[in-house]
Amino acid sequence: MTATAAPTVKLFLDGKPVESTTTEWRDVINPATQEVLARVPFATPEEVERAVASAKASFKSWKKTPIGARARIFLKYQQLIRENMKELAAILTAEQGKTLPDAEGDVFRGLEVVEHAAGIGNLQLGELANNVAGGVDTFTILQPIGVCAGITPFNFPAMIPLWMFPMAIATGNTFVLKPSEQDPMVTMRLVELAHEAGVPPGVLNVIHGGPDVVNAICDHPDIKAVSFVGSTRVGTHVYNRASLAGKRVQCMMGAKNHAVVLPDANKEQTLNALAGAAFGAAGQRCMAVSVAVLVGEASGWIPDLVAKARTLKVSGGTENGTDVGPLVSCAALDRVSGLIERGVKEGATLELDGRNPQVPGYDKGNFVGPTVFSGVTPDMTIYREEIFGPVLCIVSVKTFDEAIELINANPNGNGTALFTRSGAAARHFKEEIDVGQVGINVPIPVPVPLFSFTGSRGSKLGDLGPYGKQVVQFYTQTKTVTERWFDENEVGGAVNTTINLK
Ligand code: NAD
Image 1 (cartoon, protein in one colour):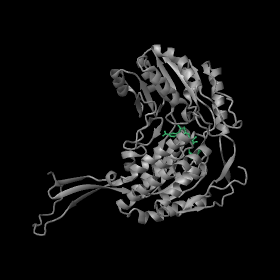
Image 2 (image 1 turned 90 degrees about the vertical axis):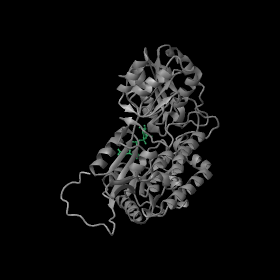
Image 3 (image 1 turned 90 degrees about the horizontal axis):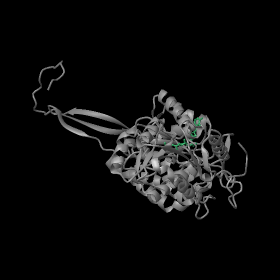
Image 4 (image 1 turned 60 degrees about the vertical axis):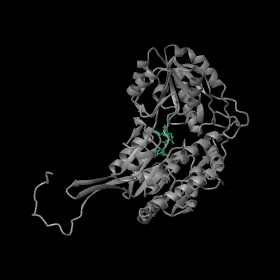
């Protein structure tokens, strides 16, 4: 924690930016230059309390707001996000590092969820069964559950907050958001725009902080549901702690995504897809391809893949033509460099070493260039750990089924992909693979919001995914109503003390 003259990031309480009274601050740093952009507060317990109280109070009226009125806010919100796209992307690149076009992609994938939230009238419909017994009907209503909270990671500071609060609010809940302390600025701009679009004061509150604030969210009796996206270690803690406190919890967590390449695949398209998915966003995507499993003769493609990786430009995210920007922090740089070192020590072949690249004009940036290891085996640290950097591990196997076995034995289940021209192979893969999101000739198969994000096994805790149909269930309680209206002229029968058998 340092004291500098940089501007402070505000909390957002009761519809207004609020300066924190905390004594604990952290710098928000441009990872390409080390410039301190702002200081972010670690909110005090009283400030957390105020955020939850504000959300609780506003729930009383917000839950009664007509569905059309809620939808219209999100129609306006999507327009404001579009109008401010360039500004949002610039803030995001400055604090997170990814390239400007990729930052626009980050905002855009969140925008799609906002568009979906604007269709809430069609999404939050109940069901009705007529005449379930003589003169009796049963129907369901999907009611909001109250104050919900979101805890987000650094790698998608626009998209992931937008996975959470628009759908929570559109379904009639109120929200407390705790963004990543590493890059909270674009999230704050999105929160301001949400208020400009008409989100009423108190419906969306923001507190910043680290473990203490997260634990306070997990424990708070007035918070009914928690959505978390981040690492497996922290997500597991949040799931256990918040579940113990009786909350509904969904945690989307770490990954090790394998792309299987069959020798019949279109070589050029496959190599382009692999390089883009492994090194884009400097490998800091939860759906990045971090392991390429080359089957049989496809192992002969390693030199071409390395040649492709070499062509990528490493530089500041604001520079034209940059493919690979910096890692988010000096700590991330040390960690990724250490893992590369470990890979060498444990016997993998370093085909391309991206450490210490020369990046003119950015000598202080946290850069690692595309790095490729071949001869990787499942016991190696670089295979077992999520590196979260631009490092691709290549595992060579003899058969397709060996590739499937390898993936199914990995504890993670976020995403996987198969590259092939064979429909039969694709069908076999779709049936047998035990991973929640499968791409066929699509390297990063993140579903659009008509569906839900469906990571599985070690990459997820909780049944329901973020956005799409599943999240409507997550943010609502289904109530069934069974009703009967007596006809005034109906003759009353006798008292019945048995279960009706008809
Ligand atoms: P992280 O787990 O370090 O941080 C996530 C959130 O938890 C942040 O808001 C942070 O402040 C908070 N936090 C950090 N340490 C904590 C602690 N000890 N106790 C309580 N809270 C704590 O994750 P990150 O480094 O910001 O993000 C990268 C990770 O997120 C990767 O593992 C990536 O795979 C994962 N991720 C997963 C998905 C997905 O959908 N599955 C999407 C994006 C990122």
